[in-house]
Image 1 (spheres, one colour):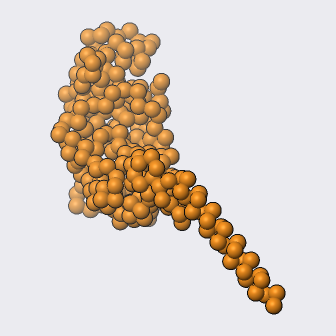
Image 2 (cartoon, helix red, strand yellow; image 1 turned 135 degrees about the vertical axis):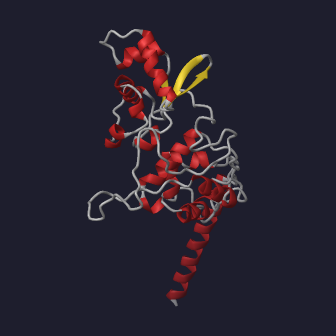
Image 3 (cartoon, helix red, strand yellow; image 1 turned 90 degrees about the vertical axis):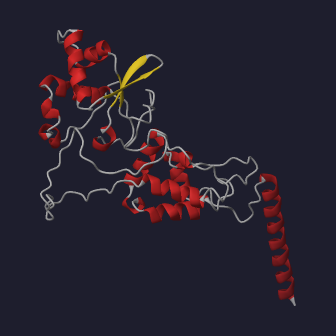
Length: 286
């Protein structure tokens, strides 16, 4: 299903895209609208042509040339999955705001293509702001932003490496599984949690989250009756993240990891409290 996408003003000034034909640039925009919310679109030329130009008579050879132009400037990065061709739009998530991503319907691209977030060997790399094919920045040594404008402040890039390292340093000793490979879906999910609230846009806040809400939780660190453990991929998913923030997994006063033992301990506490009240009442009769 096609989705609504944004076209930034910088798109029309991009020098790299100026090197390709107008039809190729229009095809590029069409690929955005038919990709999933993770920047992956089917790469079969006939399928793409029928989706983007359903009423135009365009031969497969002509449309294929436009795709080759986009590949040539690395606007589209091709890859195959089970013999089927796909394209990864490398800067898709930088220029599109996805508040509620739909279910991932296309395969993940090889990590070699997602080097902006993960290296070819699955080792986490820093997320940096770089010039891309859909945005060319002019820098003459001074900021082009007008300090008197009402535009919202720029969101700092999410320090994926530092946050994952903080999780491994704080949560793993408490019992959580370690993170060695940080996949694209998790990168996108963490970036979204980062952008949602300015308060979260510091490594110190995430260290507080891991220390106060995760590492001290018997349920999240495998000390509950089921011995299940939460990892960072699970933590940054929207519904789970909200529950952690709201304190749903904070230990109760009696939290041994066994629901039956917890209930018995709570019942004993209630009984002792009642006995104490009765004794206090008897003392007042005299």
